[in-house]
Length: 339
Image (cartoon, rainbow, N blue to C red; front, side, top):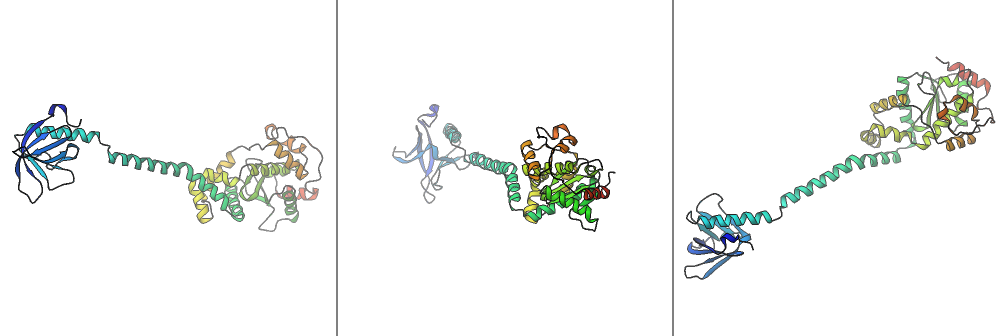
């Protein structure tokens, strides 16, 4: 039942007009179960309006003007004396309106949900996807450039490079030869020795490994330095150092790398600080043991020099060919004295 029970069969008189070009005529208005019936003074039916389609044309104004939704020409005018009928039509209209679905609210909810979904994708999925894409498309030469730029930030915070397998100047040839031997033995693309590095070794993008000059002290065995290089190589194989950099630097660094082929200097500086403050990670012992075996480097010197937790379950071996010729090793020690 659409009409409120208290108004069932309510009647009133009014002025009705079927269209805009017709004269108004006096009619009797009857409120039924679901319709408003309009009859003339001889009780002949002139029109039926669905209660669900009635609209108020002049809210708050008397005489009240009603009409069927969708037909602006047909009107029904009720003067101020028909308060009960006017009140009944308003109550019925309000009751029907409350039961209708609110399209605007549904649209707002749908739009809000869609926006929330897009924002969630941008916040949680897009950064990872952009980082993965950057790692896929960045060429090896760019990785090398990023590694060298990051090394520049590291040396700004620690000591300078005292020896490099790819020097820009003309250091002693035996120093270069010593590092080249160590790099070839450990399959390392780039190898440098730094003074005052806060940790024994670290790996950077582009296959670059940096050693602290204390590993070239007169009391050290070259197999110890080789062991730390192998450890960094295994760690780099387990976790891409460029991925590590981009994760810390955030989506903007990944975007810049994809669009410009570079990583912002500020991101490199922050990452360098974090690397210098972070303790050395422990590689998988099986992978590390395999790396020592492939390079024919004995593990005993490394086990003796490293902290106990840095060589867990690493099998001890004493046999292996000389890592670096003695005279070259001595030259490297001379060129990179411990401060």
